Image 1: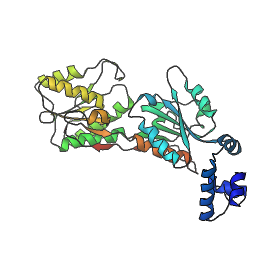
Image 2 (image 1 turned 90 degrees about the horizontal axis):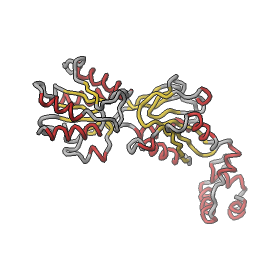
Image 3 (image 1 turned 180 degrees about the vertical axis):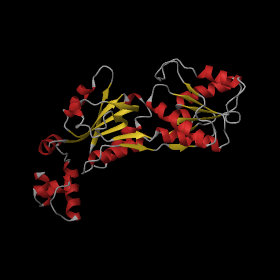
Image 4 (image 1 turned 120 degrees about the vertical axis):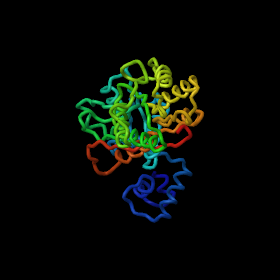
Length: 330
């Protein structure tokens, strides 16, 4: 910085202000001249020294609760990273898995002295943070803190199910079956939204068919599937559905295959709709799948805004809406 100051004929404080947003006053012409000289000389900010002065590094640390293993959930990191870069911050993530406990991962993240810490989950769930770390996490993404001690950003599962079910009803479907994800908070909330939309549409929501996608109590894409047997039984019975709502796009892919086996056409015989908008699946199915897109990228962007805000945010649960992606399966 001394070299830049000498070349530009200004003080080191002015150089610092131009490059790091300090309080020194200068004209736009001077600021631009300093930046050009810095680039010419190959100046790179010493982040370690800057961190020692400020007490934190220009980093946002993310505790990634299996997030990195989910191709569509990484949209959270993309949204967070894009917003952070706009504020000259970088994002790093450390994965939480069954082999590492939450307290040790949080402590490891804190060793890097980040400006802020976020906790992001692969799917909508409730997380109990250790008491000593509740104040260290600035925002929960795609999950909520068990004791509501941290601002939480979650997808509006109830609203999404209500919207897609209403969409099916508006398209003329009256006998709708939901093949849901058992044992997950998202599945529970979506079932409630599904039933309410049916009731509001003049259909008996309380008696509507809701079936588990897998044989296990908690959904996993590795669990034994029940989709084929469900669809075969539904389509061979006297009360064949005219629409099947699926817990996610993977389940919808199985439903497509099962319907083809029994000779049913989509959407002429049976409409199919889903949740997630995993584009590699939804856009490549034949016909392309109508689905509700999770607000992952929006959650990431909003999380960055919350973490870098000058004022503390209220410790509340904020629900973000899904987006209906209309394709040809309805």
